[in-house]
Image (cartoon, rainbow, N blue to C red; front, side, top):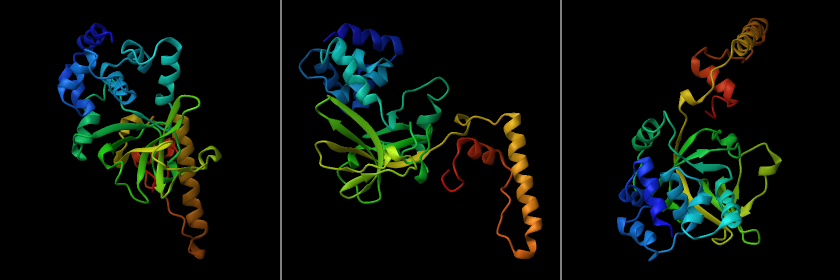
Length: 261
């Protein structure tokens, strides 16, 4: 355990052992015991250290003695890849994201995650969305709950983090992608639920604003809808002209339906 390196990283990002312990959901003494070798650094703890210290997971694994060299690099991606990733503060969202999470009921035992893929897009979870996940409800989830889970492959020493809906006893996706259609049986060993999604949100600034060309294309589609309304009025067409708000542009660019936003 290279405790000097860890303490140097703490100074670099301006965090204390108490800050790290808070993210771990443990007492400060746990961090001290990890540094002195009295307690082992687990993969779950290593992920939190990497997030708080803003360093690669592979380096945390190597500096803590969990794995060295290529082994650390092989283990690290397995916990970084998947449908979701733990939120890491970026310039511009250090205050905004936590404020929303607190308003939605964040407390000890919860984590903020970011959606990375469209595995649950048909249920409204789009890449870039933020989620509040309650780790303490991992064993109390029920059918229909959206959960964060990990699928382990012990033969390759890797695990993939997924976002799925629980339909006991399996996890299912809500996506048009054939690659997401495979179901996974929750057995508590190879497929483990890590937490329940209790809230999700989308910050408008995270959605790219449309270009002039895209705005013209959207206006053209709106005009076509208006024409169709007039032409089919006698037939009582149910075509409805979308409301022209900034949010409509954002939803159109992001590829979500109004219902899925």
